[in-house]
Structure formats: C-alpha cells, structure tokens
Length: 233
Ligand SMILES: Nc1ncnc2c1ncn2[C@@H]1O[C@H](COP(=O)(O)OP(=O)(O)OP(=O)(O)O)[C@@H](O)[C@H]1O
Ligand SMILES: [Mg+2]
Image 1 (cartoon, rainbow, N blue to C red):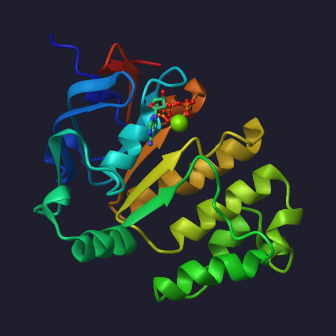
Image 2 (cartoon, rainbow, N blue to C red):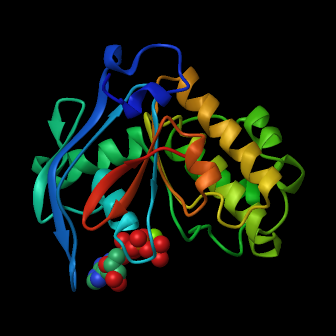
C-alpha cells in the first residue's frame, strides 16, 4: 500500500474531493543563493499546510511568493483561475486585499495607535464590523483601548492575527504566528485559525519553527535542500 501523507488530514472530506484554492507550479527563486527549485504546492479548500525549515532556508520568501507579494524568478501561482503574476498591479492588489490574509513575521501594527484603531483600519478597508467574538477568542478584547506599543509581544501578535482574520480571507498566510506565544496561547490561536479554515472552506499556509504547531496542520513540509519534503510528525 502506498503511504499517502494526505491520509493524516484531520478534516472530514477526503482531500482528493476538495477544490484547489491555490496551485503553485515549478517555483524557483534565488537571492544570494538558490532557495528552492521546481517547487510545486497546492492549497485546497479547508486545508492547512505547515512549512518547517532552518533559518534562511527561504520559508518567508515562499510565503511572499504564494501570497501576491513577490514574483518568483521561475514558475507560476494560480489562484481562482488567475495566474497571480500575470495580473496588472491593480488586479493583484484587489486579490491581495479581498482574498489574502497575510500575518507577517514582524507584526506591522501601527505603533502610537490603539488596538481598536489598528483593527478598524483593517475592518474599514475590508468593509466589515469589528468581530467581538473573535477578539474574545484571541483574548485581546480587554485591550481594545490600549496603545499597541504598550502590549506584550504575544498580545501584539494576537492583534495582528485578529486584524487579518477580520477580513475573512479566503487564504491565510501566517509567518511564525505563534513565535512569541506560550504553549497554551499558541494552541488557542491555532484553534481559532484552524476552525476558521474548516468553517469557511478557506486555506492556510503557515511557516513555523514549532513541530507541535506544524503537526496540527493537515500537511507538514520541511523546506530542505531546495525542496519541500513532506514530514510526518
Ligand atoms: N528581499 C531580499 N533581498 C535579498 N535577499 C533576501 C531578500 N529576502 C530574503 N533574502 C535572503 O533569502 C534568504 C532566505 O530568507 P527568508 O526570509 O525566506 O528565510 P526564512 O526561511 O524565512 O528564515 P527565518 O526562519 O530566519 O525567518 C536569506 O538569506 C535572506 O537574506
Ligand atoms: Mg522567515
């Protein structure tokens, strides 16, 4: 019998029956050295994918390529029948704004503004109301009127996660979203994100150094020797 990594899926529908949200094919990219070559990846509806790998292996670069932020030197990224990097700047921006939720490795919150103001910027842009239930789940509802610069690193991280999730994105890209969090809070944040993905038939691509977090995703890969190698955790 073939060992199929996809059988580790925690979701109910067989991944084979699910629709692809994003298909990346033949991606190669180099800066000072080649990060990856001929890399293929699919993200399906309701699916969460984790990528592990040593520092400098190219995980953030890959996340940026998949999420409209960086054109790969070779290869294509297909999203919703459109090749991302064949779109004009305006169409690409629209896809990024409407459908992609990008949680950066550094939080990019607006320092000097309160939590509420930071959240409103996203919800106004996305034309959504503040999601009180989400804020309570992420345990930042009590912090709404505090300046983000006064929050702990973990609280800031959760604000940036809330800000992205309030857009109700079709794809979540999260670069070490639990890096500043204790184990318990990291698990809570993962609960929120994984439920969102399943309930909304969204997809998630998460970069992490934490094998425990990666193990909670449907598929885990390690970016190693310029390839994505499936890992069973
Ligand atoms: N815009 C850029 N210009 C030049 N080099 C870059 C750029 N972005 C990334 N690099 C280089 O590419 C390599 C991979 O960077 P990347 O941020 O993708 O790694 P990573 O796997 O996310 O690492 P970490 O785990 O430390 O976050 C690094 O050597 C980095 O210096
Ligand atoms: Mg990185």
